[in-house]
Image 1 (cartoon, rainbow, N blue to C red):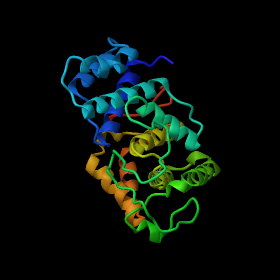
Image 2: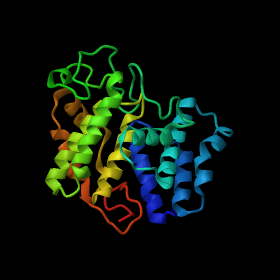
Image 3: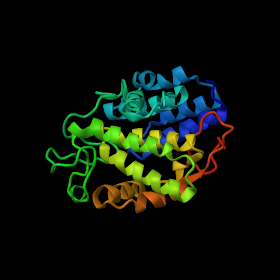
Length: 271
């Protein structure tokens, strides 16, 4: 599809915010290139190649190069789109789109303890036994609130089976949708299928799912501190009220006239 200038601006704004919520900061050169992409003076291919071009002229460290590549790949993923077929396959597709060429193991499930680059939450190497595909309240009080790696596939199948049974929350009123979305977000956050980048993948998936049933999420007003606090409260205390408040503050009815909507700021250009 051909994105309109407003849709390009929305894609850039969302990508920038999604990076920010995972403590990823694009360089000034990448921000300038993104502005050109929004205006249409730089095509997508040239924009994505910006990190490789600028590294030749600047003394930049590997961490900054990684951040720039992830930002560029996020915009490309949103521009190209992906097969929204649900399940672990879709999460892996999004992860691969975000991190291929920027990080190792793009699109691959974690097999051991891991760190999430978004919130630096450590995955413990040991964890009490859990019911297959679910977490008990007692286990969620412990230091490791994440699914064991051996149960990722089973847990994902159960989560998405329940989501399909609820018709992906279509037909819910606003309050019901917010409660359901907060619960789903928490479960997928605890699933933590990848060694890094889980937060970025989840925000993209949730935003697309939300739009498909008639809502949009304005992530632009969410701060990194508030996001981490809400997610941690759910993970460690089995309390999704923080996530409910967060979603209640950023949700609005979708504009169905746009081909693509993932909002980047309040009353953003795609609306």
